[in-house]
Length: 435
Image (cartoon, rainbow, N blue to C red; front, side):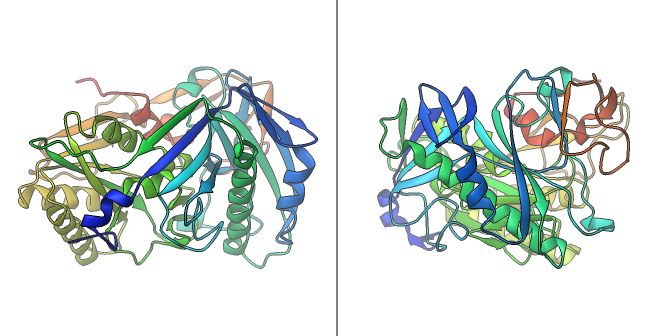
């Protein structure tokens, strides 16, 4: 039996030591260094690293902290700094180095900090490729739902340079941000971490159920995609990964559709991944990760993907499955077909969904449903509305990209317009209440 290209008998070799350095404050300085929970960011070195790429004309660096009266708009991806200290690959392989299998050796992370991309695209876009706002509120009621609001954020506010289209510019921004993430984490290379954890799947406990996590991501084309080992996943069929590959950045986000996106820092430290690893060997055996693409173009491709995902779960000898997904609408159909295929393969499946239901929760809340979905957990309704008070500082523009509304004053919006709200409500334990 093979596991993501590796013989299962060799799986015991896949061990990752993850060193976490918590960041509670950050400020700019002449060089990058970490000390006692504070990150000093070498301002000029970061700018110089970014501006090596002529596709970026300029970049302004900003810092925001939890509780600041600040609102960030035009946010693309957010990345937790990682660097490989020991091992045969690198972090974010395919971007920061060759696409060699990651997930082993030793990785350092700056826990509680993200490198956040903020920019306008240089060319007009409409339809499915049009950018949709994802607002980060650093304080007030919106901070409860905004992803990264509880973290220190280094904002890279980019100005486009010499590019011929939006796709080329998007590539430049992604690569520059991942290089910065690695540079910042390198400040800890020679340091003893406050916390060091070892991750592997070695210690299976006989008699406990084997649980597989199926992580469905969105990959629909430019501006709505996810990258696996440096390549977009539009044509990808479900694929098995060792969970350590996720921790090392094998999956990078490039989906900019409103609040139902998953930023890279939530791929590298997803709430489901963390929970399953924490329970491994105690009340479950974590059998592995299956990455599936959502939003296939037709019923044939959706069914094909669902059947392959279920087959892989059977090959991993799964006794149960946990399913999560990114985005909604069309991609919700892909998700329900996976749940259906797993149940039909006699693998009991728990699935986490977000609901619509209208501002008052009175409307139909799920886009699609199958009778086999008998264990659904809701992380709440994302079209409930929230009033955001005016803020002292607005970063990223003056008006909301998708509606033109002035952005610094009071706003009344559905939750789904906040940055990565679906995965954040999952992370923070939100639950729906019966109406």
